[in-house]
Image (cartoon, rainbow over all chains, first blue to last red; front, side, top):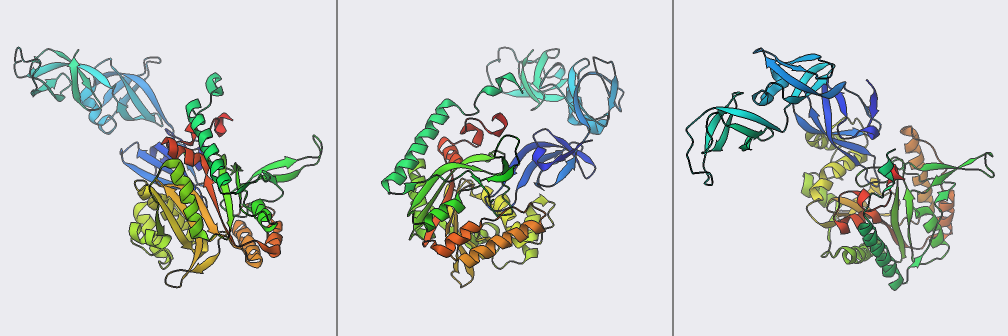
Length: 187
Length: 324
């Protein structure tokens, strides 16, 4: 991979730090009128998810990480691995539990997710912002109570449990915001 | 290059506000009988400061002829001091300055600098005048003044004049992830200042930091501080954690000036930085006699950023470096 010097750093650049691929989420050039220049970067470790701030001197450089984001279709899980396919090439990739993380509860067959590959292997899975999933289990709906507040738990087809309004019934299809894990509406 | 790249990064409305501020600055100095001057952007000499890199241009007597390097000036300081020594009296300049490699949210490699000099002022009197100008433009209340030493004690709990190198290192490493192996105290002080203190000043409006460590005097004179330790008669103005102005009760001692230029040159050599011609004419001007004076440089783009409450220099200049 290419080497990048501190003045080439920008948001989204992926570099290797202590053996892990990391992404830059915020890059700031710091230069007092008198004194040396630094580049202050908010980093996120793509394996552990850890975020922190790192300061580079202007003459420092870092090795680029072979990381790319690809849109893929979710196929199935065999209990150990989650399998995805690149629609254009039919190439398949298997992501393990660490890479899938909490995303597993939003994965529905044929939905597209963003898979981050490092050296060709999936290291993280980002589901679409919104998914539509069926309710498999919830307490009976309360008729005529559509405007009132109040909520109850509902289990979805993927096993996820979300808080939903009282009028939701088993079999309803719900729109869920995967970033917050929150109910949006009936689909 | 994309087709839409022809557009300015600043809105026309912002540029109108910018023009009003430039007019207000000129009015401020006209009312105070300070003379506007213009000095060269290109010089045979470059700034000595190891941490300011000059942009080099090539002058040729005819196209394709043998060229000699000229340097775009990183500040008009040397030329303005030559005017002062020649008897100009109080002067100001509102013009472009150039610094290589400086590009970011608060930086553009060419930027607008306001620099002025006041015979018979010291740093305190000049802080008063900076305050009058800045508070007028930004409608600010009176500005707090704190010494560099008190600021470090207040923000970091350490005495910047007494702390050992290892104290400074461990304080920095406690809060920062930085691969720095420097053994220069000022490198660590600058790091603490820019990475921990400036951000802490972000919520505190305007503050003058004055009486810098003697080792950071640049071209300020030294004087004894409260406990007799020498300090630099230098101040900086920070607004919302952004460095806006840097001023000195100016060094007038020619021999000391020559020593500091040579020390900078030696510092450049030690860091493997380019050696560039030193402005010996500044030393000659000081030998002739620079009047007792104070001077300050203020970043005009940043002043406009503050007036418009924006965090990006791109919002206040028509065409930043990547669009120029």
